[in-house]
Length: 294
Image (cartoon, rainbow, N blue to C red; front, side, top):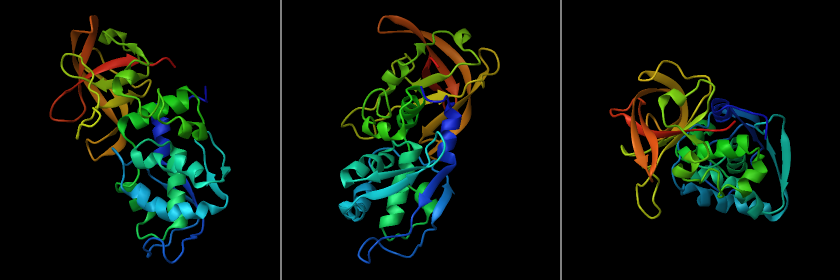
């Protein structure tokens, strides 16, 4: 296992993202100019919510890929600390890392790399700050929770995570399978202050809601809690949740949830519980809860 990092501290690696910028090497025929990026290290906030495939990924890559006709060196600051220089010997090798933030699934290092390549090998008109804030790159909900599980609890470094991004458990894992990574919580008295919990959106009868392949506007939602933030007694408990969400500004955020009530249910012949939480929306959200083993 890698050095332990809480969900909020993992999120802070996106909130305080250091990106290394090389001098532009774009030719006159690539991109549209107007903005000259700085060089060296630049701190940015990469908290955009990105659900689904970005049309910009392939458009940008058409300009970037030809530069890999020879080995290309890149510089990344891993979440574990220090700086790391890596050499890519082909466009295919670099694309495995570059693609992930454009589909909501990248680690902080992948966001660094994607940004670095766009601003190095294209003429651009969008500032770095706008690139992060607008809908170019970002994270979706299981991209964050599954990415946290893969990077922190499984201890994969950023290079290995790129090759396993589509494997379970990880950033593409569905909500019911992320819930199953922990022990199902059946009673509010099982919640403990030092626990780290996965919350998954479900219906009022406890059935976990997953996105459906081929169904437009189909989605689920998964969240993770920060340990040592549970306060109050059953019926009025609050807990800090870290999530990438389309609600409240479409951001990666941390927010206090209030657990308002609980209902005992039976799902697949097993007794469990639905917790109804206030997250600032007009209606309470029903969730199932499981406790991760840390």
